[in-house]
Length: 87
Image (tube, rainbow, N blue to C red; front, side, top):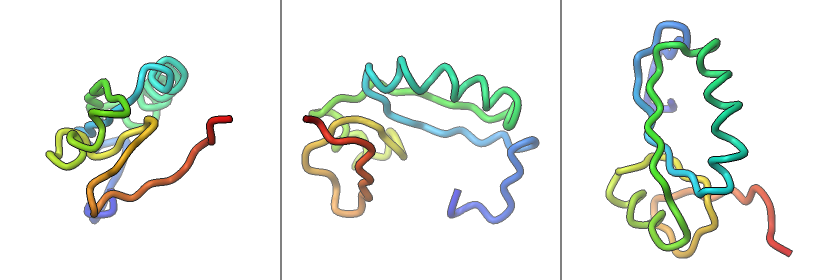
């Protein structure tokens, strides 16, 4: 969205490619899709299964623009935010 000048979720027809691990997909995807139906009804979300090994390559290739998963080394231009730590 940072590259989009005027983003209006109600009228946008953008496609977002996200990578989710199994555990994140089962917990996050249903409420996300419910909210999108109301807030951004024309937005398309393409979900790609990712895991520890695949996410760096998918990000580097541009197959996903954001991923939520446990990670290993990421592309140099990737930004990471820790959502939770494993104990």
